[in-house]
Amino acid sequence: QMHKTALDRCERDCVQSSRSKGRQIAEQFCEGNEGRVVGFLGVADIPGVSASCGTQGRKTCTAAYEKQVLQTCPKRREADPTVFDLLREACQEEGIDDENCRAVGAEAAEQEWKEVQKDVGSSCDVVDEVRERVETLVPLKLECFKEAFKHHVEQIHQNTADLCERDCVQSSESKGQQLAEQFCAGDEGRGTAFFMVIADDPAPPLACGEQGQKACTAAYERQVRQSCPEQSRASDALFNLLREGCQAGGVDTTRCRTLGAEAAERKWGEVQKELGSSCSVVDDVHERVEESEISSLECLQDAFQHRAEQMHQAALDRCER
Image (cartoon, rainbow, N blue to C red; front, side, top):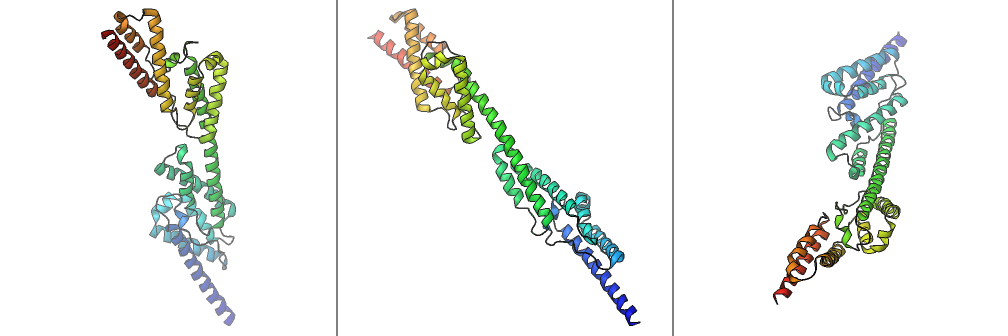
């Protein structure tokens, strides 16, 4: 009788303990932010404690867990079925399956990465910020999940950073080739005047730092050597100016304006050789020079126009005198 009484008491205690355990797991499941795949990051306990009273204890724990979730956070169950199933495993004798826990951790990392991207964006310049935001969500004690989550976050970050780097280097190389094409587009042997055919602003900053700048510069120099080596020797100042388009700061404005002014002077002299330098053709010379102003590189365009106007006015004043 005493043995039977002791067994009955142990069974009651075990069932009661199992029911309490199921409710505890349910509370942990319901702690997270509703509707978020990683809502269970609020888990503050390792729930993989085995039930000691066999099948009845496991069933009691599971039933209490499901009932409590249904009462407390039914929408969470609908939103996070994978997590719901994972924590229910804590009612089994062997506890949470390690492999399954790690798979859920990896999935949560991927989902949370996407959630943070919705907030801060997905461009390459915020990759590190996304990682930092996601890493703050790692749980404290559920080791299998925590390790998988952190590892997968690092993998996503590295893969994203590598992709951004490849894209940026390719973009930088294309930029260098574009600059080279602009440099080589002029008429050979025309000094610094020929660069007025530049059709693009070659001075946007590069997003991938020193590596991108080196890739751009190398592509620029290689393309110029292949396409117009004689022009690079004849127009060293222009060659160096456009190469600055590969730097984060872009083309130096002061030197750009100096070259623009020199180009206007050269162009004025070339047109005078064709039309003459008498007072009767001053306006014609000015008009022809202005027709050459086809650059969208603002520092060149402004300096070229300003110097052309100065020379035109100086010629008019001289003729008037």
